[in-house]
Amino acid sequence: MAEVYDVIIIGGGQSGLACAYYLRRTKLNYLILDEQENCGGAWQKTWDSLRLFSPADQSSLPGWLMPKNEDGFPPKDHVINYLCKYEERYDFPVKRPVKVENVEKESGVFKLKTSAGDFSAKTVISATGTWKAPFIPKVKGIDIFRGKQIHSAQYKNTDKLENKKVLIVGEGNSGAQILAEVSKVTNTSWATLKDPEYLPDDVDGRVLFNVATAKYKAEKEGKKFDPAAYNLGNILMVPTVKEARERGVLKTKGSFTEFTENGVIWEDGTKEDFDLIIWCTGFHYATDHLNNIVDTDANGKIITEGTRAKNTNGLWLVGYGGWTGYASATLIGVGRSARATIQEVSEYLKD
Ligand code: FAD
Image (cartoon, rainbow, N blue to C red; front, side, top):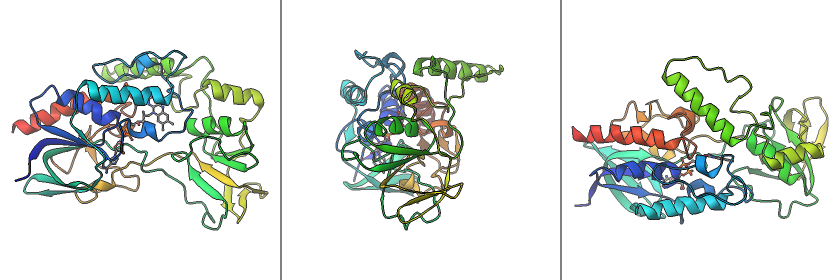
């Protein structure tokens, strides 16, 4: 008979690894299934120039600090390298590439149907992130536009963008950073639903994490916290975005109401043509594989208490950000969530 694991973690990105770190300290028998060919989770997919907004010493998973890098905030390759070494260091049992197609539950045991056959487990931790679920709003006429459209999840670099007219959509950090980069090689416009809001220049990832930690502590102790100038969702003035401001390109044209065959119609009725639209409009949750055992909302969200699925015993969800755990979509934040989850899983399996 096939082995029934105590725990199977779906997803071998930073969240899956943080859970594995705490599982390794238990006697539980566990396995990680990850769809990617290589280690590093979604960091392998991001655009080439992406850097962490947090310094190395504030970007670590539990147990082992991310090594420092020489010039400022770590580039994505540094993060991928760290995640791969982390995996090796603790010798986690990871199978790749294995895509979990769907999960069923029979007689209290989870059956995972995967690209590499079936696996069984008493409990499942889903740590599949958001990268596989890019969100693009349904704007009127989107299907008649004949130009190219990509999501920030597919954007890599400015190769082949010279002489193209590019529309960047979205007022978040991705929108600002991609606009900063693309505007260096070609003609860009920026579409945003509201005016972009910027953090003060002297606020970097380090300050953000200090504020986030202070906020977390205050909330835990029932004290008041006034974040004042620090809205953690505002655009962080990383060097490339500062430089774009100096060039005068950080200017939004507001929002557009619909597409034409060649471009968009802005709110004031003027038309503008584009060759490429880059949607920097965020992500939903990559939870499709759980559709047989849980109800999800339009964003892929499941009803949870902390990280535990409320209506499905034995299922946890880790690393999806504010939904399942404070700052759990960050390297430094996911450890807290993973530790609490493994405590709950261990308790559950005792019964
Ligand atoms: P992922 O990294 O997406 O890993 C999930 C893994 O699960 C992937 O390998 C995926 O292939 C696999 N998977 C998915 N579905 C299945 C399936 N059905 N079967 C098997 N495997 C599956 N965080 C910071 O701490 N600092 C930063 O500076 C920072 N900057 C960021 C900048 C950007 C632009 C973005 C988008 C995010 C940033 N983050 C940052 C956030 C964070 O680090 C990422 O969101 C992180 O990748 C989340 O990790 P995860 O392990 O939850 O998900």
